[in-house]
Length: 196
Image (cartoon, rainbow, N blue to C red):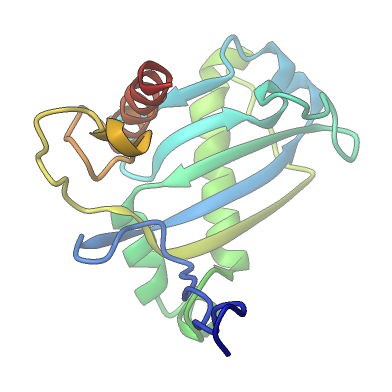
């Protein structure tokens, strides 16, 4: 009917964090509750460029509004390298748990392996002590990050007339995808603020 609400279908949502047309890479996202001794680690987040397994590690309590303790420990998050995610998705040990369906998939073998890697990474900051998680999960995201950038000359795509900025690790290459995403997000915030 004329003048009535539009009958357009709702937009299709995607579990992918990567825009269409940009090649994506998988990642495992590890979430683990470590003993409270992990509070001695002198950082809240770190990029791990030399690790073949872990790309980034962060303390969940450093995020605004998050509790300092969860289930009697401190919640940490780690994001794997694409190489580890591909290897685990293709391994017989991880097997069908990671290959069964599209979207995020949890797997016990991946959680165990990443728990060991996180323990090794944090040990130098804890006097050599290897902390075992009180609990841990790992989830595979098949399209977690962009494999390549658009090679845009700026950190974000800014459309001031619409007060719009497009940001993400896919816009402009940086030393790591996490750095590219952070720089892009900061630039997008500045672009939108300048347009207001």
